[in-house]
Amino acid sequence: MSEVRAGMLLLATPALRDPHFCDTVVLVLDAGGEGAFGVVLNRPTALPVAAVLEAWSDVVAEPDVLFSGGPVETDGAVAVALRRTDPTAEPEVLGLREVVDRLVLLDLDTPVELVSDELDGLRIFAGYAGWGADQLDREIEEGSWYVVPGTASDVFRVDTATLRRDVLRRQPGDLAWHSTRPVDPEVN
Image (cartoon, rainbow, N blue to C red; front, top):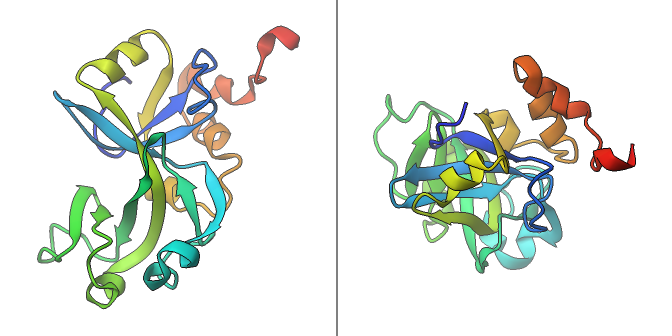
């Protein structure tokens, strides 16, 4: 599967040597003719959300730390949330923008009290991953990324250490075998 759209996961293949993305799982938040952007799901930092965005500290999912979302604009924050209700059945909520299903982007300038009751989970990322027009398609063609369906539980896992392996393991066919592949097969 190589069609990239919001809600898909990009799993770094062993061919991807860029240290920013080695062994990462990236949630695609938007993709189109002008490029794509997403956030790395399996790079928690040691910095508590309360230290930089105290108003959101009671709303974020465990672990309540910032995640390193990618190498672009690392001084900014991207917030991904899970709505309690289906956004197609409920009216639009100020500060939330639908990504896919119940996953939404949250504008962190929105007052917490306006949206906190709407959320089942929130994760905040410092920075993001971004690709220009056709850049991600080229990287997929050269074998740098596996493209697979994502789930909300992938976004809000407490322990992200085995996320990449677990996502690979649930894939059909030969792709599941890559979950047991050593980091460097040449040393095997």
